[in-house]
Picture 1 (spheres, one colour):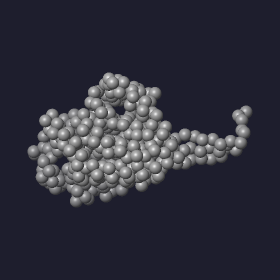
Picture 2: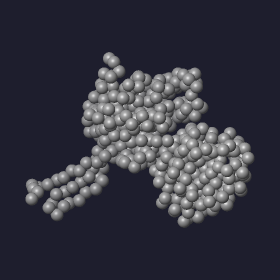
Picture 3: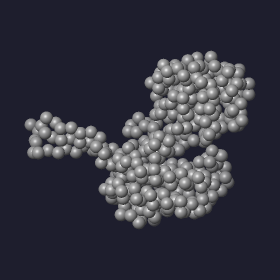
Picture 4: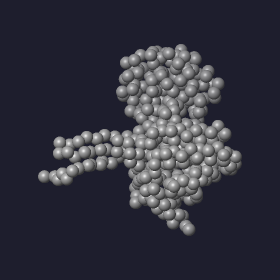
Length: 418
């Protein structure tokens, strides 16, 4: 079977499976999720062995430390994958949920209920845990899913899928409800992106190049997970102890992820005092500072930040720093250079906090907390299939509800329109 035939077979099987899984009872889906979680734990040796093949190939190919970190499956990460599946199993099933309803003067009873999207195609890079998260969320929300991970994680993704598929095969749900693309041939992606007849939505998750290719190529609707150029603004009325702690966490806890801080904005009135406390912390973590002229006057070892730096998602130990004169200037900078992902303010001044919340045009906006919380699990959603920076039809962490749409049902007693 050639690549084109293989891709066509996958989308046809997914469409057929979507009809089966859409009708599955909540308890049946939950039982499968519980078994999937146990299968991952039982197969951890197999998962680590497959993952080591990907890590070895990645090192040989010269992948960055940040990408290798995303790729690695430790025992802790396998346990978290399993825990994520069990958390999703415990969440309320969104399918059939009554969104709204009323009775018209003519007696027609209208209801608006949640239904699955149908077939979701997920295209992603480097992070094998996405395979489990996406599979769990799509299963629970009644969708069939086609998973196309990056070539750097092929062995890991196939090993994870094999453990998930075992649970499906022992259930009444069509096993094709979760499929992993088993080839690195890029022509498969072209077929998936044009498969309007079978695929209802494509969700790309990865670097700007991947997102751009999908958005420009697809005729299937796309929900984009664009880059995370996340900001933290330290206001003149900030608690500096809090600000140091938040900025350290936002940048240094895990710099290679999309919700890590890439630009730090600091009010001019407290810049010198704050930098005296903050910069040694960044230096200890090996963070390179690229700053505006005012920053470089106060931080002599900072290099010059270019216009491109303000628009860059580093995913590394590099941070752009700019001194601003007001919360309004900080908001303007974020709205011009940000990616509408996650941005925060550290302040004790409520009007400034409210102005920031009201005017920053991002999917998630924080006051006195780290942007690292932008995550489906941290939001209590169990997991996420991505963090949408779009405005239609989902925004922010995409979990169960965001993987459904709705339909109207109308009950009558013989009414006709006149």
